[in-house]
Image (cartoon, rainbow, N blue to C red; front, side):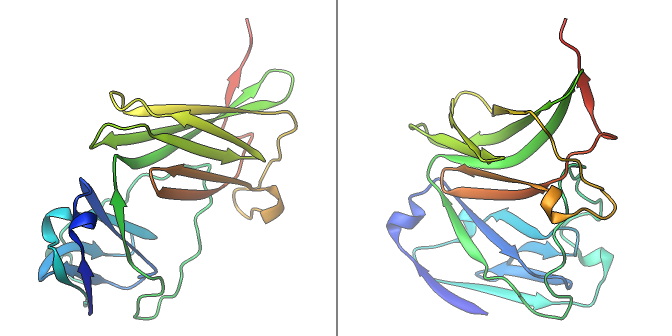
Length: 216
């Protein structure tokens, strides 16, 4: 249980997400007495819109560790789809506890919903790596996203009337990774930042999972 205070200025943001990770045991997360997230081991990091449950002044977050009972979960047990190019992070700690600091993500304009990736191999060598950002706009404004990959950074202006933006990287001599036992030296680091939010991935390119592009 943890008590914290919020100001009127913080609550002026149109969206506020609770971000919690490092919970590898069944748990229920409550904000001001109302259940908002079930931690069931299906995700490394849980994110939930909690703006409606917050108030100016004192607030309380509670994390209750539970014996597993599928009937009590707030969400179904279907595993969320994952990108086959992304290497999963190892579990933080399977002991009962919270092994990362939960935090509130205040979103002034745009929420980064998720990131999709595609590798496009060229006939004759080399490839392109495409990154698609999917977002939700809450308030108009001048917003841009940064996408960092393989030593390059693209800055993408965000069209608040749209829901997607893309970056395309050229790779002249791609590194292949063994998906069963990847070497960290063969992985690419991808970092996406948008409106104060950041997502980071370890990417493993593979010849077996490819789209071949042949220029006409």
